[in-house]
Image (cartoon, rainbow, N blue to C red; front, side, top):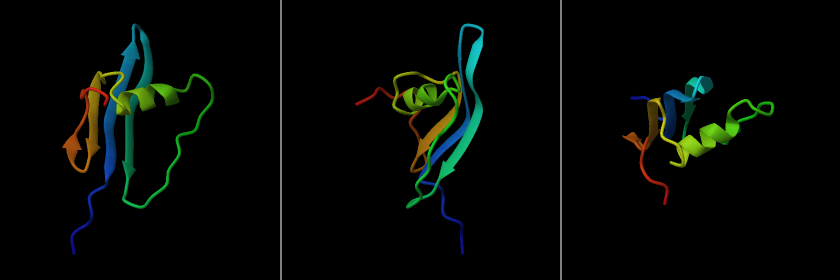
Length: 77
């Protein structure tokens, strides 16, 4: 029996603005049917992660995979 691939993945996601690294090699794997949350204090990078996933920002490095397809850098719709 083969393991199911995650529906959504962040692999090594990194984003900096000038000298400030807001997201540093973030890994996240979400399987179909899971409910997850992203929590942290103000300034922790939660909104930056959301903006990376939705295509508002382009990551400096890493992958954003949806159903195995890299969607990093695609324009928001």
